[in-house]
Each structure stands twice: as C-alpha cells, then as structure tokens.
Image (cartoon, rainbow, N blue to C red; front, side):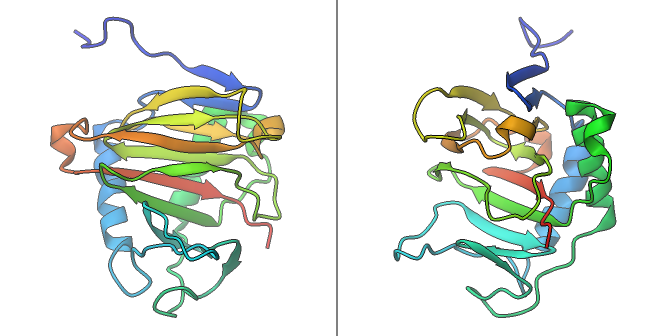
Length: 216
C-alpha cells in the first residue's frame, strides 16, 4: 500500500514546465548517485562556485562536458584546479532524452543531444537564488533530476524574479523539465529539508543533476 494519502501526479507547472514525481525508481537513484560520487572526486571534482562580485554559492558543483563558471562555459575548470572538465557520458544523454520524452512528448526530443551536466550538492543550509539558465546557445529543454533530501523549488517566469511563481516540493527521484515558453523562466531552491532522503539511498543532503544542450 502506498504511503501517500493522495498520490502525487504529473503536473504542468507552467507552459512547457512539467513535474514528474518518482520518475527514477530506487535502483535508478542508486546508480545515478554512485556515478555522482565518482564525478565528485578530483581532478575537476566538486568545488565551491565563486561569483564575480566575490560571493560564493552555498551549493557546491561539479560539471560534465562543459565547465560552467559565472557566467560562461569552458573546457577546463578555470575557477578551480584548471584541469580538463570530465566527459559527458552517452548514457546520461540517453537518460535526458528519455526524461524529456516522458515529460514533454516524443516531438520535444527530436534532434536534441545533451552535452552538459551541472551537478549541485546541497547540504541542509544550502540555497539557490532565483536565476535563469541563459548561458547556453541552445533553447532545448532543461532536464532536472533530484536525489536525496526533499526541497522547496520555486519556478517563476521569464521576465522577473518575483511573481508569478509556483513552489514545488521536489523529492528524491523526481523529474522536472522546462522548455518552450518556460525555458528562460527564473527558478531557485528556497529550502532543503534535512533527513528526508530515502534511508536506503545512503545520501545525506540533496543532489540535483541538471542536463542542458550547450549549442556550442
């Protein structure tokens, strides 16, 4: 019997933005977590991101395929150890296409080849301010997968960081895809709920795996 009194349903949060609960089963979550732990190892491993103004992001990050630094892409970790960015695996691209197809339909995946992964680790105090994913030259949908602790994810609009927006609870295994008119919508993580990860996953904190098409 499900522990959910009211099972969570697939929801279109905004035009082109879809939340699919429990998209990754326990096995899929475990496999993706194992891969993230390998990617987090140096060289080109998990790092603290520093902004041009001298601040630091509270979520730590590792990149695959292309290295993101505020606000550009490079082939080396220019704001870290200077080593080449880790390669983007083909199986992760296939996972991204499957996710996009399930969320937006098969027509959305036509000609899409993911080549960037940004993996953010959030401890219990980490947040992510409202921002847009606008450093890519491609307008292909963004695929976001959650592992570990639940969070409050705010999804807004392309014009402003303020209203209208919708707050969504993202749990371990959830999928969130945004493209089309919502591709450049502002979004952020307001709060992480420590201790809410599935115990069998063995993860303290939250991982967010974001797949993008660079167009580079």
